[in-house]
Length: 104
Image (tube, rainbow, N blue to C red; front, side, top):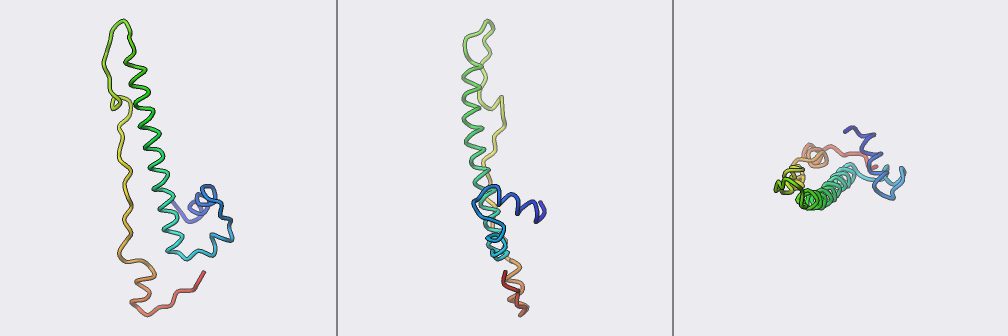
């Protein structure tokens, strides 16, 4: 996802405006973006889990030829994965090299 798509995504998911996003430092912007993705992933997981149980219950209702199914027959769920923070950020690398980054 490029920077413009990331900005639009943050604008859609939060109450921040474009000026507020422009004031964020790159590290804050990246952390906010990752946190939004993580929360959306967890929300989807809960929703899909609910629908899996619902669909398996509906499907297992009495019919002429019973076929027992479980929730995994409908969707293959994956646990939401946590994105680990990289060890060498741009700010860290610049500080090691003695480079001063401009403040946003």
